Amino acid sequence: MSIIDLLNSSAFDFGAILLSMTCLIYNTIQKHTDKPQNRLYMVALVNIIFTAVCNIVVNGCKPMVDVNYHFRVVAEIFDFLYFVVHTALPLLLFYYALCATHSLDRIRPGVRAFLSIPSTITEILVLTNPMTHVIYYYTDNFEFVRNSGEMVIYLVAGFYSILSVYYLMRHWYGVSKKRKRVLIYSFLCTVGGLLVQLFVKNIQTELFGESVTFFGVMLAVEYNEDRVDTQTGVNNRNAFLLDMASYFEARVELFLTCVRLTNLERDRRLLNAAGDETLIETVGDYLKTVHPRYMTYHVTPGTFALVSIGSSDEERMDMAREISKKLQTGFLLNERPVQIQGMILCASTRDELTTLEDALLMCESPVPFKENGKILEEDDLNYLYYNARLERILHQALALHSFTVYYQPVYDVREMRIASAESSIRLHDEELGELYPIDFIAAAERIGIIDQLGDYVLREVCSFINSGIPAKKGIRFVNINLSLVQCMHNDFVDNVLAVVRENHVNPSRLNFEIAENVAAENYDLLNRVSQGLRSNGFRFSLTGYGTGYSNIYSIFSTEFDIIKLDKSLLEETNRSEKGWIVLKNTIEMMHDLGRKVTIVGVETEEQINKVRELDVDWVQGYYFSLPLKREEISSLEKI
Image (tube, rainbow, N blue to C red; front, side, top):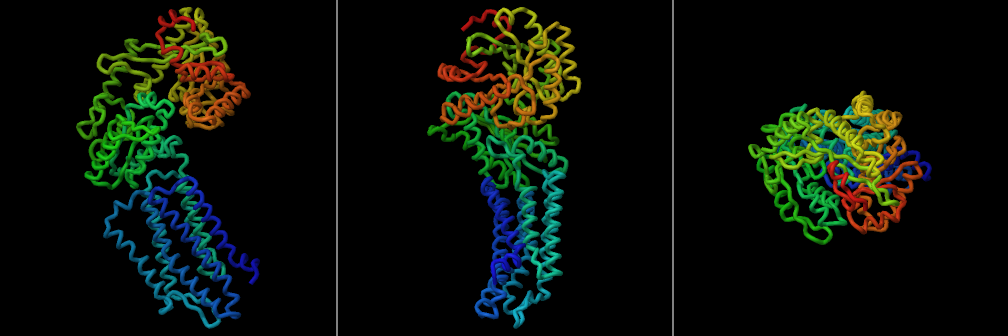
């Protein structure tokens, strides 16, 4: 038999091998190997590859059986191996669906054993087939003849396929409509392949149809890059919101554990080069290994959420205590032990959690520092009252104009003089102390006052410009940070224009900034806001570039006047020569695109010396000045 003949007779088997190998290599490269579902998926792919190889060997031996009896023996052995291994595939798919939907632990062991009976029966039928010929047999002329037992195998495979589709469609609560369509199409490919081979046994399409199904499973289930946090490798905030909303809608009983790290800024200074990113990555890697059944999310900087379904109260609290102990024991970073201050909050949909907002409160609401090191549950979750207090304070502060706008100078690198200033808002409360934007912006968005807060800052900045202090100090424009919620209003630009004209401020004196992580959520909205502001004479900037939230598409597709590079790019230059190359080439690229460049986070003499070697436009950081009140700006001395 020639190679061409073998390729023709086994074309679908070679196709099945190619598709399965593609999925296997993809999962390996993407390191999708740590969860039980990943391992079952890879075992199923190996099953298809092995059985396809068996088919190819049988097809290669068939023409030679008349020449040498040994070819018949080899063909029968590999045909037998094909049935032994391939008969287990439907059960593998079913258990994969159970693991992917976190349903395995919700099924009692007795029920699992019962559901495995059909597969066990078919395996016994296959193993005894050489004696009984109940599945198949060969005639003296080596013609393959199906027997009634093979129909049993097909029926059992259909049974497990239906169960798998049911669990993936009904119990995988994070599945989207697009993923459902992919899964439906993929399983139809298996059905098609089975029917073709069932009625036309010489056209061996079954394995190819199954490989297409598992390729579809890879796209719909295994492929999760849109759900992965680039910094930590665990599920991101969007995945958390989608999954939790689905769980609440389906009234799934679950347990939510929030791990809140509270000393990131301290450890960033302590670790210097390593920074808080390395710390978060290390914690994320650890949390992924706590228990394979728990879904891990990086919800906000320094906050992880672990969601479990079907676990006992004792198991959940044991896990919380284990995590707490690890945080206190510490991690090894830069060859030095680092203890982590934090707290763990535990709640369940059976008791405390009733809505997605409750879950977000656990992850985002400020928590009193005195709770560090504790495991908070049930009545201990007093931070919810803290959040309620914060919301009342925000409403009161707006009514009483209690907020204070601070300004951090931004310096021209070449002339080493003030060129602009970045505004930020703070609030002091007798009970809660000094509150920074990171403490209350999320709450302001949640309770619907972010627009009033943005209007307050804009009016304060206009007043600051009209005071004459900026002109005296050489401040050509003032930076104002934007929230995505503000930008979502169709009349946002019109409202800004109205305030600016009311205060008789030249639009060129204002530069509106939007963070990269916010910009990455909606490029179309970003373009609309950018065009609206820039067409009316305002400047528009992207801040935090380099944090990994978006790609270079945002730079190409949106007209920015200024790109503010995240401090992590500058800090990376302390760790490697590659960091320096990345920073230098990033600045050159931005200039080639017609953007001005600001480097933030300059805190040391060494960093400012490095910046001077680069063709950067402006710098900002604690090396020059802390954020100052407007009256403090007026007395600021030139460097």
